[in-house]
Length: 452
Image (cartoon, rainbow, N blue to C red):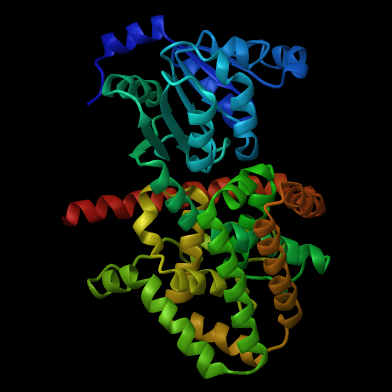
């Protein structure tokens, strides 16, 4: 039930929205809420107060000195800070929380976030957390926005729903446990895959768009996704990977899947590799395969879409056969973990929809999976690359299992620096890819509802 406009207008004139942390997502929220007519205050690191005030001088929100000033006057306080720092920041500013206010966080892992709130905030504080499942440069319209009513009345929750309605996002109601399981299912393995891809290219000192070895639509998608990940800040991925226990198991499984598939390749065990991958295909893509039987032959991606988004200067049309070990590993790990990715499409990130589209294309395009298997067994062209990729996947798994944020940051930024010259262009291409795929997802959803 949505509040009527007159009640929302009253809330806008009487409530103050506070945001602790004016990084990319904190700024996005502060700006959008302010533009919608809400009274918004925010802060960043206290030692940067002067610079932050100058930076946001013309924005529709007010910058305060620190989280104490924000907390003591705000009716809804959003902690928009890195997952690794949520407990520390809550312990510093929690005692200044206004009596009876509502508090939420924007971290990618809600278990530790809510534990921190319960430990450091006054007992009368209500807790309604949220998580926009997209990056700060993506249009919020139609994107999934998770709301978690952990400790609040229905009236409090209606207030938060009214506040976030200006984002025009697709609101999904989950518990903290459900949120963490779903985000791990949809992001942990796929992030590990494309982080490892970038690390492997860095290890062999190759910009894949500059060589004819990585030609074709699938390669375009893999390159763009990997570059898009490395164009973001390291903590965007580290928080989910390290603070979410479910993510640990999944990233380890991905590393194991890649290692086991690579072992079958170098041992020449074609039949065993084929049986394993066909089992994974029939489990993960059973929804698509069943819909195909009913006459729906549309995949999320196709040749025309994949060919459009290339960083390479080589004319489109060519394609270099590849084992695509990175993508085979994603689907195999989903199978080993019992994950059907389509089950979570309603609260998936734009990147996840591309991941799903790419793997669906590889496994369900007639003859393409068979070609990958043949290349993996008989063609040594990518054997060195696959070896480096296997090592990279194991390395990322170890970093996550150690729970070492500094090591994660060091590895991420080292690879990021290597690709820096192309990140801006890749990000622009990635945005176009996301827009196209979201339009296709929307069309398929509308067609499904019409058929019902």
